[in-house]
Structures are given as C-alpha cells and as structure tokens.
Image 1 (cartoon, rainbow, N blue to C red):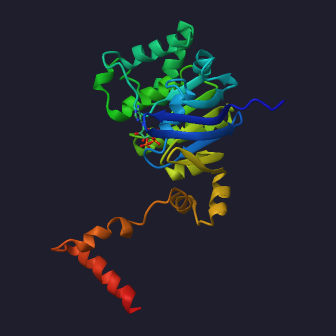
Image 2: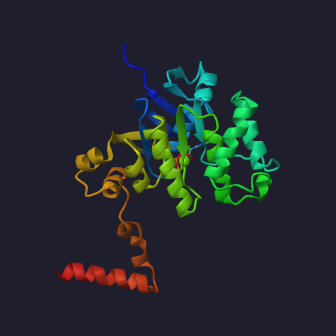
Image 3: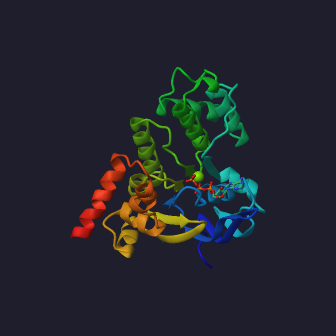
Length: 277
Ligand SMILES: Nc1ncnc2c1ncn2[C@@H]1O[C@H](COP(=O)(O)OP(=O)(O)OP(=O)(O)O)[C@@H](O)[C@H]1O
Ligand SMILES: [Mg+2]
C-alpha cells in the first residue's frame, strides 16, 4: 500500500464557468515537506489552496489532505489545517484578542490553551499593547499578522500560506520566514506556500511547483528546476517556464507612436545599433 501523503491530488480540476482555473493537477507532497507553488497572476494558485482547504468545491478529480478526502471528510481536513488566505476577511468590530479567541473556539481548543497561545502569538508578532484594539484600527501589515496568528493558533499539522509575507515590513517578513523554517525543521510541519517571491521560495521550499494557466508545468527542488531548464538561477528558470515576454516585445508598440518621447528614441537607437552590427 502506498504511504499516505500529506497532500495528494489526482487530476484536480476547477472551472469557473468558461474559465479553467485549475487543470488536472497531480500533487504528491510527503509529510514534513515545505512545498512552494509559484506562477503568474491568475495561474490558479489561490484556487488550488482554496479547494485543498475545502473552502470551494472542485469540478472534477480527487484530493486528500492529511489522508482525509477533501469532499467526504472536509471537517477533518479543516481541523488539521491552518490556512492564511490571500484576502482574509476579518471581523472589524472585534479586537485582535476577541478574533483569535473566536478562531480558537472554532477548533474546540480549551479556553486556557487559547489564552496561552494568544499571548505567545501576540508577543511573537510584536502586537503587544494593541491586542485589545478593534481590528478596524489595524494597519494592513498588522491585519496580516493577526491572520497569521489565526492560521497558527491550533498548532496545525499542515499549514497553507497564500502569500505569507505580503504587506509585511522587511523585519516582520524576515521573522515570518524564520518562523516557517522553524516550523518545518523543528516541528516537522507540512507547509504549502503560494508566493511570487522567488528568493523566499528558494530559501524555504524543499519542492517547488510552477503553475501556468492552471497546469502544473514543472516540479522539483529549486536546483533541479534550474538545471532542467539550463538557467543560471531560479528567476531565469521561472521566466523561461512561464514564457514571460521580453519587455522589448511587450512595449514594441511604443516605437510606432508619433511624438516619440525619450524612451521611444532610446529604443529606436537601440534598433539602429543592432542593424549596423
Ligand atoms: N470566484 C471566482 N469566480 C470566477 N473566476 C475566478 C474566481 N476565483 C478565481 N477565478 C479565476 O481563476 C483563475 C485563477 O485565479 P487564482 O486566484 O487562483 O490565481 P492566482 O494564481 O492565485 O493569481 P495571483 O497570483 O494573482 O494571486 C483566474 O482566471 C481568476 O480570474
Ligand atoms: Mg492568488
């Protein structure tokens, strides 16, 4: 019998009307690994994590998280997962402490456990002194921190983080990256990260998958991916795989524009240079 994987999908597919957001994705992520899903805007990353957390339904295919089927055992999936959504909804009329107490109760944690965890997390995220303020008074980065606290409050076995460092200042982003690394290495958690930050992915992830137009194009360690496409680094590999157009091609129309500005002249000169070579 094959060993249970932390996250397993078979031909996982999601349509939103005519939009094929996730197209037959197959994932096999072992327990204890940190997996990074990369891809351009609209590639299907958020849709994939929302399906895996039983927030939206799949169109076809199968998936299990922690060995539990995401459809027939969705409650069990939710109990073992922590999820930082891309655009979290916060109850603005609750204080951070009240919000985290509410999340802790959703996981059926004991009141004293909730209280101890909140104190630890508030300290870790440098929110001491603000925990009794209404969330509507929080800055974007502070809200992101509260959402990270909510994702961590029940000490989940499997953690899904959709853009974990967005809105955070450099020191807070560093702290979150160190925290992710410690959760993976010391606490042996399985972590699934969606990110656009290639250096973050390279630093934290054991395995990277690159998704384009809903399809998983490549999977492997950062080193394997770089070698496979013959790139000098992960950025070049990513650009090759995602087929990102060169800026010259993208802005080619500017050469045709009458009343060229300095930028247009520069591009024309560049062209002449090329011809005269
Ligand atoms: N609720 C929805 N209704 C209709 N279309 C949707 C919905 N959610 C996502 N989509 C579409 O599915 C596709 C994948 O979107 P998704 O949010 O998964 O991309 P993403 O890879 O997370 O992008 P980003 O990097 O911008 O966060 C896009 O074409 C998007 O417009
Ligand atoms: Mg997204």
